[in-house]
Structures are given as structure tokens and as C-alpha cells.
Image 1 (spheres, rainbow, N blue to C red):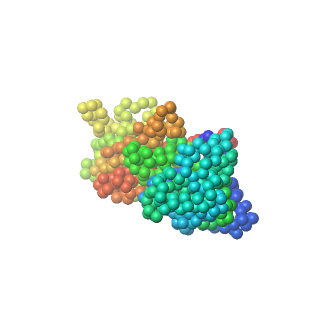
Image 2 (cartoon, rainbow, N blue to C red):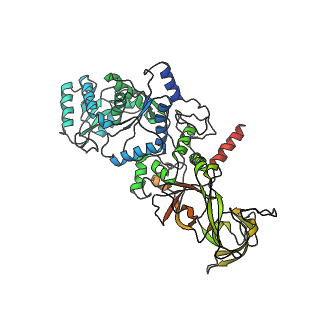
Image 3 (cartoon, one colour):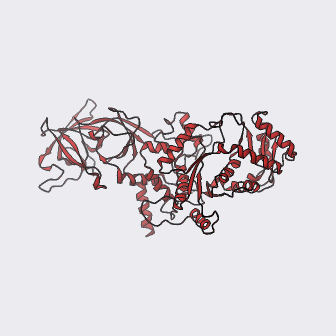
Amino acid sequence: MKSSMNTAKPETAGIEPASPEPRPSNFIRDIILNDLKTNKYNGRVQTRFPPEPNGYLHIGHAKAICLDFGLADEFGGHTNLRFDDTNPEKEDVEYVDAIMEDVKWLGFHWDGLFYASDYFDQLYAWAIQLIKAGKAYVDDLSADEIRKHRGTLTEPGKGSPYRNRAVEENLNLFERMKAGEFPDGSRVLRAKIDMASPNLNMRDPVMYRILHAEHHRTGNKWCIYPMYDYAHGQSDSLEKITHSMCSLEFADHQPLYNWFIQQLGIFPSQQIEFDRLSLTYTMMSKRKLRQLVEEGRVTAWNDPRMPTLCGMRRRGYTPEAIRNFVTAAGVSRTNGIVELAMLEHFVREDLNKHAPRVMAVLHPVKVVLDNYPENQTEEMDAVNNPEDPAAGTRKVPFSRVLYIEQDDFREDPPKGYFRLSPGREVRLRYGYFITCKSVVKNDKGEVVEVHCTYDPATRGGNAPDGRKVKSTIHWVSASHAVDAEVRLYDNLFTKEDPSELEEGQDFTANLNPNSLEVLSHCKLEPSLATGAAGSRFQFERLGYFCVDPDSQPGKLVFNRTVALKDTWAKIEKKGQTAKG
């Protein structure tokens, strides 16, 4: 299923939209409003964002972040950042630090910082309580045997031969598990619920497994670790979370979430499920993203082609654009796929308001103004951002020798081509009218130099006699230009759904071999010489670009954030016209 703004009324959740229009309702907000009305939690709204520190956050996590923090902010509540660090073999402090940085970058601040590992002692004590109540037992079956005993959606499960162990035996074995007497995988602690339940998650789920692995916070204190389904709800309860929002794949886990809370008689947090954010041409699996990094198919987690928040930040996306996109994409109880073009639309919309305009030539060809004084330089007034009058103007140097884009000249122009060609007059942005007179070619027959004349009376781009030209092109003064490397990024995958594979294919078969093009001889106006890493600009007529962290004095590197062409705006407009 593919969803888009023009096919369904968007449901806004938590984040202020780009314009101050009234927010439409959504089911999560309705739940919170009803809970406040009935005083379910004494007027409290407490949420949490609980990532596992086993990778970097991606655009899908941005939706959860915006919901968790945004809805709490809307209702005067609080949000905790809690790391679900129950799997020490895959987790690392590197990911903890990166997640905190990403949440802050998106514009949110947590009220409490917690870890599931903070609660290991309490979770263990509660496990003992369940064993004593006859609600949990130690099982010696292997993982494969447990899987076979669980049954299917149409057949009930079969109880383990160890299901009816005496309470004292279970307590003894569980204590010995904790003491490290048994090897990994030899025993587990399972909840004793219902092996005939139509919900497979209720068929005696595993609560603890043996894992002799060092934890990034607790070291070697523990060799048994709680499963997510056991740790999650109890962590919520300990923090008195009122609204625990999860993606839809956890809907079938909600009965188990509630069962643990009810059996233990602890604070009744409630789990609410919503649709995940999926994008066309994008892979959201952290496991598969890690594979791309480890196999060197991308440079790192923050490669600008990656859907990670650090990758999008490096590419030049703004947190405002991502928040506005999440708002427009909405929240529902049905999974769908959102067009990548929609995200890019919001990136353009935000950058259009704030990014300074500059001139840059990515594929340079030299233009010589034969009648311009050889040693003369003048400065042209250029507008920094027509969308923001307060941004003012800047001075751009102009001289006899310029660079223009190769695409802005054709020796033999096709029909409908109005840019520079022999005998044709065009306008230079902020400069003069120029007319092409001749060309110089290299041994391969390629044009390397275009000779023109300029009209001194047209300074600023207007002719006093009122004559018109059909094209305006940008330029850079050759003697003042700064050199730069520019990286042009395209979709990382060639298919809208990268998971669509032919038999025997790995998802990497859908990688786009042309997702990165590096241009090494670009010419930029001199104002960009001191651009700081992360600075964003619109290269006039070319797109939006961002200074890459690889950039150094004398060795500028820019990433293309997004091209100027906005396909989503056309889709949206077409949809609105059809509705009208």
C-alpha cells in the first residue's frame, strides 16, 4: 500500500505544522484527550522514546521521536529517553552517543535519561515473584525445540516437559542461571501462560536467556538478560509511563505487555500502536543498513545516501523539514509507503526560506569577453535570498574571463534551446548581456573556450533600449573562483520497494550503482571559501548544497542536498486540482 498527501487527509500528531492551521485529530491524540477527560492518570501525560543502542537512528525513528516528544509537549507532559540495552552483544556506547545527538538535533529534549539496565535488579526480583506465584518456570528445551513446541497459527502449542517443575526447583535453577553455572542457550526462563492461546506471543514466552557477554554499562555483573517483551512493559511501569507508543508490529504483543503488568500488580502503563514510516527507494532495517556499512557499500552510517538522521544531517536536510514531513505524513493504524518525493518537497520548502543563494559552476567551460578591459574587476550586487529581504545583498566579483555551465552553451543548438550559442545574446545573472562570437576547441573537437562580447549599457541585467533575451545564465569570475569537489547523490536503491527481489537475490541487488557522482573541478564564487561544515546554500539554477565535514581550507567539499525540481509539488497540485 502506498500513501500520499493527496490520497488521504493527513493526521497530524505532536509537531507544530509549518503553517498555524488547526491540527486535525488523530487517534493517539484522541486517546490522550479521553484519558485526561476521565482523569485516568490524574491528569498526567508521560511518554518515552526507547531505542535500542545497536545502530544509528533513521528517518523511521524520527516519526516515533516526534510523536513521543511532540504529544507530551502538546499536553504539558514529560518524555524520557530510555535505552533498551538488553542485548549486550549488539550494543555500544557509540550508538548511545549518536542517538542522543540525533534527538537533540531534531529539536527535542528529554526530561529523564534512563536505561533498561537500570532496572535489571528489579526485573530479576519480579521474575522471582512470578516463579513463586507459579507463573514462570525454567525450561531446558533448546531454542529449536521451543519453536517446535509453540505450534502454529492453526494448531495449539505443546507444553514443555519442564513446564510443571516445582517452584523450589525453578528458584534453584534460576539462581544458578544468574550465578553463571550454565552455558549459553542451555536454559531459559519462560512465563507460564497458555500454550493453546490463539496469540502465539502468549504461549509461554521466554523472559530470560543465558548470555555470557559483557554489557557496556553493567560489565560482567549479569550473564542472564531479560527479553524485550519482559523488560519493556515493566520499564514503562517503573517510569510511570502513561502512553507507551510502539509501531504496529507490537500490536500482537500488547496482551503480553498487559499480562506482566497485571500479574505483578504494578503501575498500569498502556501500549498504543501506530504505523511505521516507510519511504520509497529506502531501506529502514538497521541490520541491513549495518550490512551496507560493514561491506563498504557506503562510506559510513552518516553517508549522505543513508536514511539515517546523521546521514541526512550531513547531506544538508534540516530538522525543521523532517518534523514538517512527519506531521504531513500523519499517523494511522495501517502501514503504508510514503513517496520519497514528499520528504524532498519539505526539504526544499524549508531551504528555500533560509538558504542563501550563491553562484557555482559544476561543469565549467571558459567564457572570454573580448571587449571587456583585461585588468578590470568590478563588483555586482547579488541578492542573498529573495524569500528573505532581511538577508540583504552581497558583492560578487566580475571580470573579463568567466566560467559558465557546459549545458549553458551549444555550438549547434536544438530547437527550443535559448541559452548561449553562436550569434545569440543572453543575460548573465546580475551582470551584462553577452553575445557569442566564436569558440576554441581542443584536439578532441570539444569546446573549451567561448568568446563573446558584452554590452556595457546592460550592467545589472537590463537593456536601456528595452530589448529582451530569452535566457539568463549564472557564472563565476575565473580569477576569483574557488575550487571545490561536489558530490551529487541519487537514490541508494533503484526500486521503489528495495525488498522486492527475484529468487536467490540479496537486497543489495537493488543498490543503485550510480547513487554517487563526484565532480572534482567545480568553480564557486569566492564568498564560499570560508563556508563552515553543515552550512547550506542554494547554488542558483542547480539545487541545494551543504558543506561536507570533509571540507578543509583550500579543499572545499559540498554535498548536493536535493535538486531544485520538485516532483511532489506537481503531484500534490494535480491531486488538489482533481479534487476540485
